[in-house]
Length: 283
Image 1 (tube, rainbow, N blue to C red):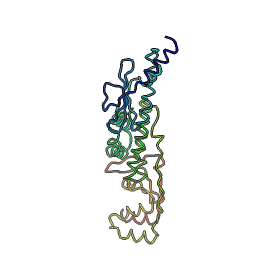
Image 2: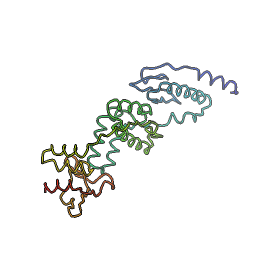
Image 3: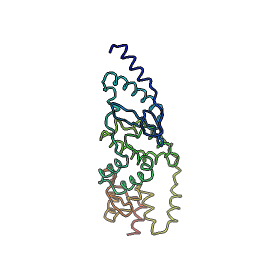
Image 4: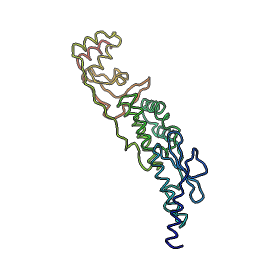
C-alpha cells in the first residue's frame, strides 16, 4: 500500500463520526451517567470505557483523538498510540481507600479517628464513596469544596479537605492516580474576625457568676490558655504548688484519655495567683 492510499484510508476511518449513546453499549460514542461523561471505543477487538468526570469537552476531544489513533492502528497494526487508553483500568473504590487510610493509622488519637470518621460519614463518602478512584477528577474535588463551603466555615472546609488530601495521597502512592488532584484546588481563605477580649473586670464578673463547682475549671481556662480537654485530664499530681507550675501532658475527650497530638503540646504552664487560689479552694 503506497503512502497516498494509506493516508486516504486513515482519513476515511477517522471521519466516521460516532453516535452518542445513553448507555455503555455496542457502538463507539460518548454518554453521560450521573454527573460524569464517558466514552466507549472498540480497540483491537476489545471495548474500552473511560470516564472524564464532568468535562464533556475533554471527553469529546479524547474520543476524536482516540479514533484518529485507531484509524492509524487499523491501517498499520501499530497500536502504540493507544497504550494509555488500553491499559487495564483500576477499579478500586474511594470508600475502600478511605477505610484503608484509617486502618493504616490505628495509632492515631481516639479523638482524631473519631473526627475523621465523622468527616467521612457526613461529607466525603456521600460525595465520593461510590465512585471509582480512577473516575474522580480535579473538577469533582473543586465542586465538592465549593458545595461544602456553602454550609460550613472556611476553617471547617479546610479540615474536611485535609482528610481528602491525605486519602488522595494514598491513591498516589498506590499508583491509582498519576497526581494528587487536591493540589490543584485552591484552598479557601477566611478573614480572621476581630477579637473583642474581655477586660479584667469583665472577666472577674463573668467568673463570679459561675457556680462554685465549675469555677476553678473556668478560671484555669481563662488564665492558663489551656484547652478544655487538657484541663479535663488534669490530676493533682500535675499541679506543683511549690513551683507555681501546671504540667500539661495529656487530654481527655469523651471519657478517653490520650497523649497530646504533638510534642510541643506537652508543656509547663505558669500558675498565676488567681489560678492558685481557685485550685486551693478545690483541693
